[in-house]
Length: 447
Image 1: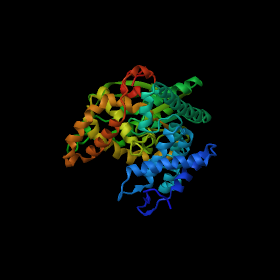
Image 2 (image 1 turned 180 degrees about the horizontal axis):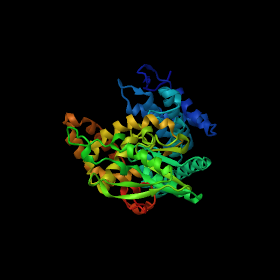
Image 3 (image 1 turned 135 degrees about the horizontal axis):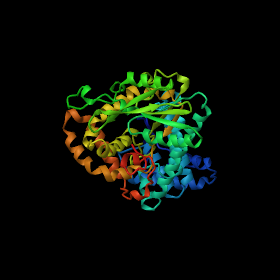
Image 4 (image 1 turned 90 degrees about the vertical axis):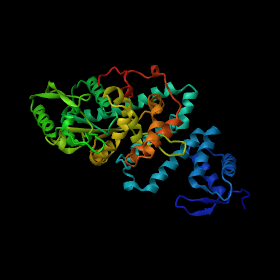
């Protein structure tokens, strides 16, 4: 009989069962075997340390959970220098969590992103020691954070290059490339970067930003807070977009409108646009996958690309940060200097953003030709410098307001994980042509 004071453990389904230290040994040893390890005695020593940590943290009648045990195994493997074994164990946990959830037979996550893509992102984060807040903080402390910026840039650039290669394989038919994705996922920078890749292969490109087709804000209804809902596809002049796309494919010149986000109105001036026979049209739009947006274009002439911030970073509770929270911070930073919105306005408007994404974007992800991961492992310590100071006030002001509970829950969640990150203030370490510059400014590109 095990002499440990840990006699019982709580399974994920709530069932209380006998604690078996041998299962801890097996879990560690199996992970070691995955990377070529053969020393079972070392697994037993590490298991003893795991049990010791449990004994210190759990006093009767409190019971440890399976998740807590696995968290301690991860921590022990990393602290004892078994990085490869830790990676194998983390990936094992992640894979089996997805199996348990059985989301759409393992084909798609809740965001309709293929499971394989999520797996690739997590695997990259583990390989580059940035899969948790703790590991990212360690990279700031040990001086390797600038290297992480470079590594993340290379990963993103490689993903864009893969998309360009797929387009080139269908170059005889494709006339329009649609770059879609939820708010602040990196569509505009991706449009520019994709254009650069295709230009290197001899293709002339024509960019058409569909944000210019917004109706004037005065045409949109206000809610009880006086806020506009311009996140829906119908906030855009879909009829004019389709008319212009059809004319462009016919070789005609259109007069593309200009939209001013600061005034909320179209300007009097327009921009002439013509698609030549040897050009590809690039469309950057929040709702690019929404079929009525481009119904005038035959499907075989369209290449659909989707970008999302597929953040695979754990907080101190072992939970993955939410993609939407990362994009909220991006938009807060950008809106404050580019669209005359203060961070509070962006936060209070975010429920419109999420509702529109769920209704008009996520359902169509399964129709795309390529998915790009727009997450940047280094970005949250950068945003902390810009935004963390606002969140204590947000949390306090929304806490007792029943009409702002969505904002309160979101503000509290973001406050807590930002508080855990170390702040990064040296923007000179960030190149002036990378995706994050779309949000913090200082880019060589014009947005």
